[in-house]
Image 1: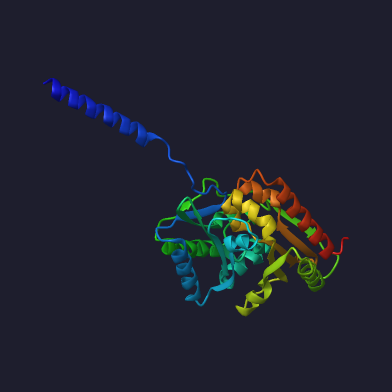
Image 2 (image 1 turned 30 degrees about the vertical axis):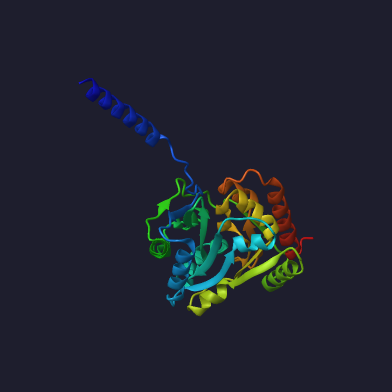
Amino acid sequence: MYKIISIFSCVLIMAACDVTSDNEPDKDINPKVTGTKFGMSKVPMEEAYTALKTGLNNNDQIGIVAEVDHAQNAASLGKELGPTKIIFFGNPNLGTPLMQKNQLAGLDLPQKVLFYTMEDSVYALYNSTEYLASRHALGGEQSLTQISAALENLVGGTIQNDLSSSVSQSVTANEGIETVTSSQNFEATYQSLKTIISENENLSILAELDHQANAQSKGLELRPTKIITFGNPNLGTPLMQESQTIGLDLPQKILVWEDADGKVHLSYNDPEFLSMRHQITGSDTEIGQIRNTLQNITNVAAGNN
């Protein structure tokens, strides 16, 4: 009887120990980026990325605009960064109505999906339509529902898993957007901007997108609106080393747009806003350099210097 009781006691003690161990909180590495949807992939990163790219190429309504391998760019500078890649793509039939309501939506278009690996887990991350709606005051736009469904199907299918939403989905209207008004016309402003970036040996132009031309190709109207994407891995890599998710908002972008009164503006994402969005606290030097660069570029392109 003693032996049975002793064994039973040991079992209870071991079970209690197991329960305590099981109840210890696991480290939460899920992204916590305001206004995003994400999922953990059940397949390797390259397989998921390739599947998404194939799905995009097979849809004649969608065009791939650009791809950036952040980790490869970091390696070219002798810096280490875990696997981190982003792909930009769009459908003018769905994106143009958003810019017709608010041209500043073009700053967050085309759509993009970031893939990255953290502690052997592969994540896919993208901006939610709730984020777009709140940031650009797009409530009620029907195309948002279509965009949301398309993204969920594309991304969920490629990672072969369900998607989750960040705890906070919305921001205030125009939050984190800096705008400079130009003293030049639209084309002069854009060409000046492009020249300034091209002549800066620290910057590389990744892509240019003419939102107005894309709208017109679908028989839709849109005032002059162009976006140029460019970057400097020397400044961007340290930010991603601290938080890979900021790769969703890199490289930098500047939107040039003409309003209903014919005035021309240059708009870009405030680096301070991006650092807060991605919980970056240890890269003040890089954030300051990026902010100064964007301010200088836009002011010169606007003819204000």
